[in-house]
Image (cartoon, rainbow, N blue to C red):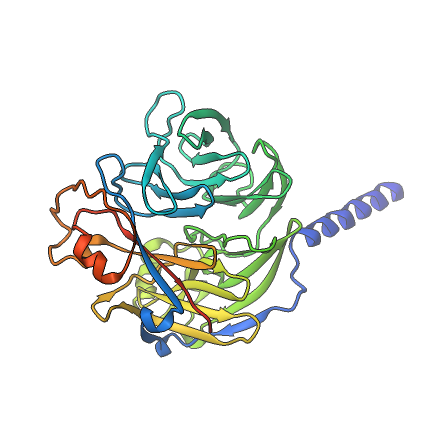
Length: 387
């Protein structure tokens, strides 16, 4: 009996050791204090040190409705239109349409709804995850189907590659499945075995941000989790809280969020409350992220070295247009946002014809207004800033 108790005690200590190696709560967490009522209305021309616009080619084959996720790398620009066309669109670095990747359907290599995607630069593969079939679909850069990997034990919200061919995965609603009590897992390259699992928050509300992972910069990866308002650093299979965003008296009450639903959250967001940091971008010096306040999307920029910051409630373009403030991606030091073609045109977007506007490339704001039609694809805004 004594030997059995000693064995159990040793196993318990080993478990604690493993848990602490994968989620460190003892590290010092820096507080980022934000008063949302102090948000500024700023012109992007004044805010940016460099500013340019990229017009994407528009044709019957390249037309998409929305940018649910964008990946920009040396292979080009990849855009996921999740709900309408349900494809990934591939453009060159100067906006010329190359091809679309993936297709919704029931045939070989076809999925039901693309949940998330990533681009493997090394193998030149595009991977599209579908939670309805619980599968990861692999395509080459030309859009040819390669293979499908089925994962049966969980549902994915978003995923990213980490070293050694592993995946870091943000789980969705996993009730009734394995890992239903975990929010993040690390799997092997076949997605059929979880190597590490961790759960950075305790409350049960699983209303999550669309893209919790930032870009990886010099082997540093940051991520957020829903209404936790914490920014975690992920290195060496370890999640460490680094920054706590403190909205003070404006912060959402986590007791109200516990077991909440989207209708509860929507009501709270309209009552002078803040939360739900998302769309995180890390530049090496600054952290950019969005958060909701009174249902509006705010943009916050924080220099991690000087601790200087800028809080933007409204970002204007040319003193004519109000941008959505939504961060999309970063590439080569440029932050990427978008503006819809309909905003640059006098004619409204509703009922606008599908155009064959094959002009593309980097343009000035005046050139955009002359060359953009209401039915064109969204225009990418690329800018750099220093605070």
